[in-house]
Image (cartoon, rainbow, N blue to C red; front, side, top):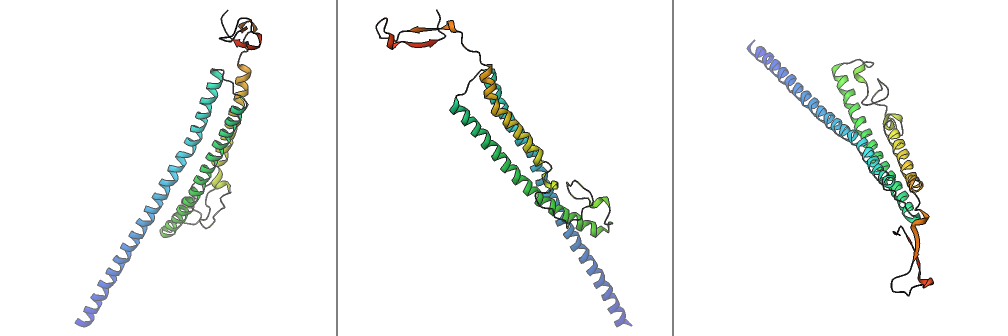
Length: 217
């Protein structure tokens, strides 16, 4: 009886110890998943906060140049106008490239968070059609985590498309502003221009005369 009782006690102790160890391992596993989820979510939110800041900063830059051209009546020559167009094109392409990289990295975070969310819901026994299984930042609810849409899906480009449209419209308008500045610049009055001799030339030297605009009479 003592032997059986000792064996039974040892079995109970071993079972409790095994259950406690298993529970501790599960708690540690869940803490790791929670840490990974929070890290992904933090990176996702940080990138999302910077998306529109980059767009707005570029629009403020273009607006400052446009306002200067219009308010100061600055007229660009043909070469300067081409340089401004090239600068706008490079700015648009650079921001589009940066924003595309942001969307690709956000997609990776979404997939990882959806997987962790699905795993935790399974651990808690939550029904498959529960609203708690809604995907992270998706346009539809209750999408299974196993469905990994391509990067060109609306799920990942719903912010990228309007951002690029807004930037494109701002770039086109900014490219047209120099023409408006040229039209708004008043022409100098004809009476303000007269012929004057070049310094050092003899009075009445016709070939050496130059046109000087805006001189006082």
